Image 1 (spheres, helix red, strand yellow):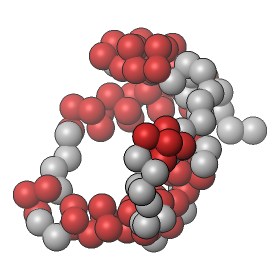
Image 2: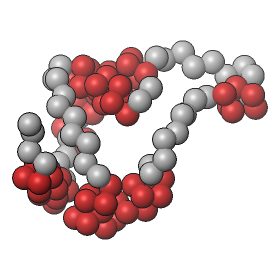
Image 3: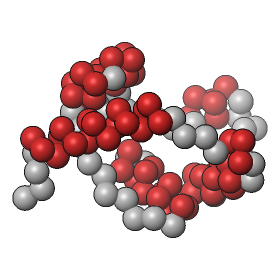
Image 4: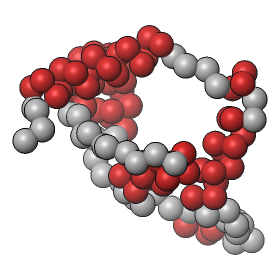
Length: 109
């Protein structure tokens, strides 16, 4: 699955349609330096993730929960307990500033 497919699956499970905005990693890191290692290092190159290694090492391993169902289960787990439903206002504000700067620089056309 691509990142877009992953996020759209999450949006479908939440009953919302996403508008994905692809923001350059350098811009994100300028506002959130803690993201630098993950974005520039880990996610700078395309990757394919699969479970072939675990299947090779543990042949009896059998993944029985499809991605979309796992997402629905995770959302159900979060919504079952208000204690798990926290909002990081600082991070939300950071993402709002990043998106605002990006959209001012590259308005939709």
